[in-house]
Image 1 (tube, rainbow, N blue to C red):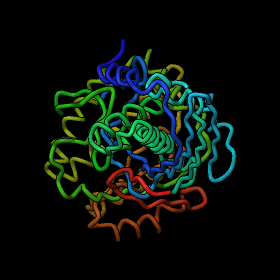
Image 2: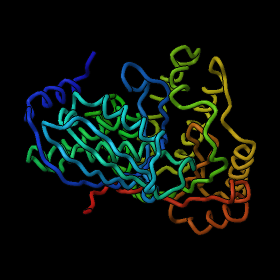
Image 3: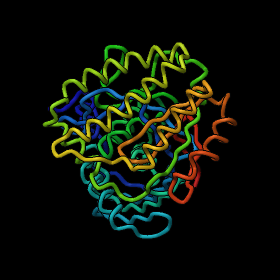
Image 4: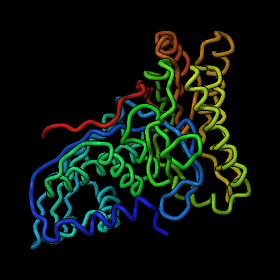
Length: 367
């Protein structure tokens, strides 16, 4: 059953110029994000079983430029380049996505597109490249739509539609079109929240979290043996699915209060609880599976020992993979970087460590 926003965007699409034309180029940089409250499991079309909350990153981002030519006499055509080279696997996924959103962007039926992307971080390095990639693509498509119809205006409605469209490519991508702390999923705690699109967190955020640091420790960059899509599907028959939904909603309420109060200890407690709960769901699926690497466990134990010994507020989280995100306030960055260099880097694949922090969101740029 279509959601409210889906009906609105389809209705708007039907009213657009039936014979659009135009050519040009648009470009966006869109960052990845790291979930603090995880979403795991989907319903209907890319809608989450539970609300989630993330921090948008600053330096880990996708840069995408899209050259387009739209004419009623054209049939859809796509050229895709990643780092300047053809990438058939990515092209296939992008092509499938563009076919999926034709009803929202009718001009695509008569478009020749040339997409070029690159990442500021290593591919498959434990950063959510699908979130940054589909976020950038959704922003670019919304820009083209406005240019073709002469309604260019980068406002709240623009980003809301971009979030909606990004979600159809990768669920977590809907959070990447905003900066700072971002919420996706319907909750009574936040007015305007929706399963269809993400929104910036409306609760006041303590300054302590505005430039929070996030260092990514790449333990293993190989493709996961079980994809996130497959993991989401297993939640349909998971024995603990109902309990997880309750847990996520409870933790979301707690984290909103914690972010408002600047409670670093409480933040770390929820941060790590959510990370381990996510992997517990994978292990207790049927079939169950483990994405953690032995070095992941060593890093977790080392971080917790360091925190106990020093009293410094540093914690970890994990996405659906073996790589570790180390989160800590800017005030202790020097100490934590030294700790990472001396005690954690040796457990990373080829010593890959990516230093990042909470960022302000996507940027449009001239081409």
